[in-house]
Amino acid sequence: MRSHLKLDVWSKSVDFVVEVYRMTEFFPKDEKFGLTSQITRASVSIPANIAEGAAGETDKDFLRFLSIAQGSTSDVETELVIANRLGYISDSDFMTSSSALDNIGRMITGLSRHLKGKLG
Image (cartoon, rainbow, N blue to C red; front, side):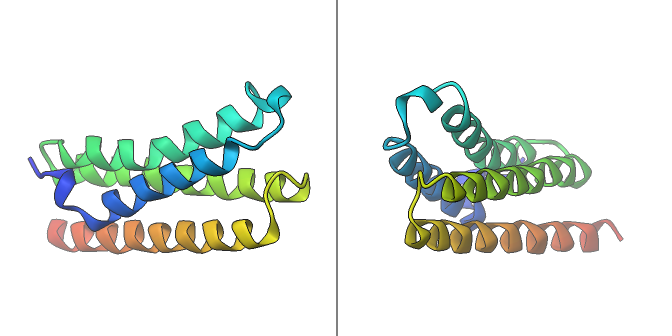
């Protein structure tokens, strides 16, 4: 069992979630159960799956949860594009959050490659 608290990718993804919550605070109130809920849930899924995978017994389990976390990055990316096109987030916030999300995705990919290498 690994401690997710020591993983840089987990820490960065938690920071990202905090920023998503700050951004969605200004979404229209009628989006509370729509896009706001979708984007916050998908962003929370990223560090949650990293943590759950790290707590697993095997590297294979960890890889499965990292794959789910990576899928959530794609969900969030799509939701950010929609929010930007609807004018809910500025182009600047969109670019900043997209860059952070891309970095998290790369870190997940790197960790996955490392674990696959250990599995042989």
